[in-house]
Amino acid sequence: MNMTRDFAAIVLAAGKGTRMKSDLHKVLHPIAGRPMLDHLLATVDALQPAKKVVVVGAGRDQLENALAGSAETCLQEPQLGTGHAVQQAEESLADHSGDVLVLYGDVPFVKGETMQAMLDRLHAEDRPKVVVLGFEPDDPGHYGRVIADADGRIDKMVEFKDASEEERACRLCNSGVMAARSADMFELLRRVGNDNAQGEYYLVDIVNIANADGDSCAVVSADTPAEVTGINSRAELARAEAQWQELKREEAMAEGVTLTAPDTVFFSWDTDLAADVTVEPHVVFGPRVSVARGARIRAFSHLEGARVGEGCSVGPYARLRPGAVMEKDSFVGNFVEMKQATLGEGAKASHLTYLGDAEVGAGANIGAGTITCNYDGYFKHKTVIGERAFIGSNSALIAPVRIGTDAIVAAGSAVSRDVGDGDLRMVRGEQVVKPGWADRFHDAMKKKKAADRK
Image 1 (cartoon, rainbow, N blue to C red):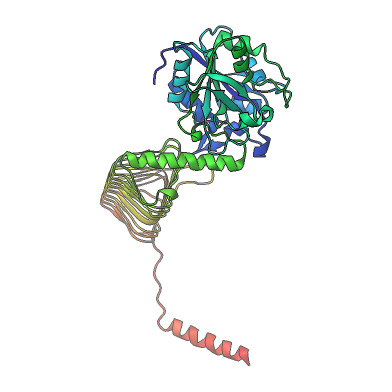
Image 2: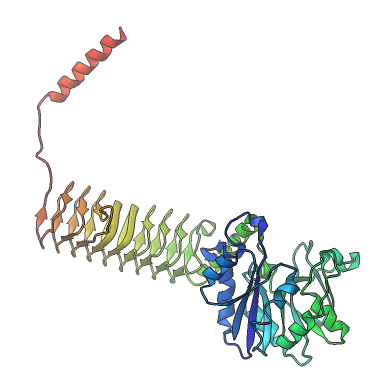
């Protein structure tokens, strides 16, 4: 989505977030593995803003570290309301003469299309001084109200605490998100007072001031209340996660992914599933996972930082950790774990296997109970298994080690030296047989147990 007008975004994130009861700043709490602030900023970035300013207060260091220079910050101290917060960004925007969009770090789901609609409305024929984002929740509760006519022209904005009974009966509510031209925004803010129930400087008062001047203000409505969901507590964070997951599941299925039990599948913000992928129940996708066409992710599997190729099968009960790569038509079964490992085309590790820091060639077969011993307590080491190699069950491959093409490692072997192409490696102690020993042992133990009972 490309902007046709110059605009700056101000994101308010100075609140203490006390209801979260957390050492982590409220807007850094993750939804689908991504901080809620990053969800919002990604949407803003798609509109190509001229500048982004995040207003910080409590937890300033955390926010500045998380932003890592991707947005400018300014400090609000003390916190004297939303209007006061926006004023703190004036110096940062001294050289900006375009539009200003005011957003909230704890309201992460505002759509880019909605932001664009607000900015467009600002430049409509009647050129309103301020554009407000409104919404109609099922229960208006204690939200501030937007009193507007049928054409969206605002007569009055009022906080719930200061509203009359008649005004509280209005269902159109204020999300807090606003747009105005920069000069208008800061000129109006200088005239905002704090004569209200909270003794704070409300951003919404710029609408009433503009109206009193004889200027018009307008409201744009969000498509759904979910778009302006605010997150202030752990319970609200959980509801926001559920909301995001539901939308992602619907999107995945609309794009050709089969989810056999959608409500049990959890995605990361960047999960990439191709068409004709099937996902069975109780699968969790962590960050940085891509799954190619025709792959099947079986029940109770967990994937993060992994790439699954076309036609692959994963699980059930498999775990793919960061750096796991499955090439076309490869297979991992139940209780297989991969980390920093590549499974070549058509290769198989059917069950009870750990592949860490490993490269497995095309067509190789990894037997049950096989592990790559990749860590010596200080450093990681690599195991390379050649094409069509066969690793027998319960084998330990002690890295660094290389197993050649078409080689066979006999079951129960502990391999610490390279195995050549086409070779058989068998590492076992000599088998000892003592005829009749077990019978004699059982007889002796039974007699001893009987004697102990007397």
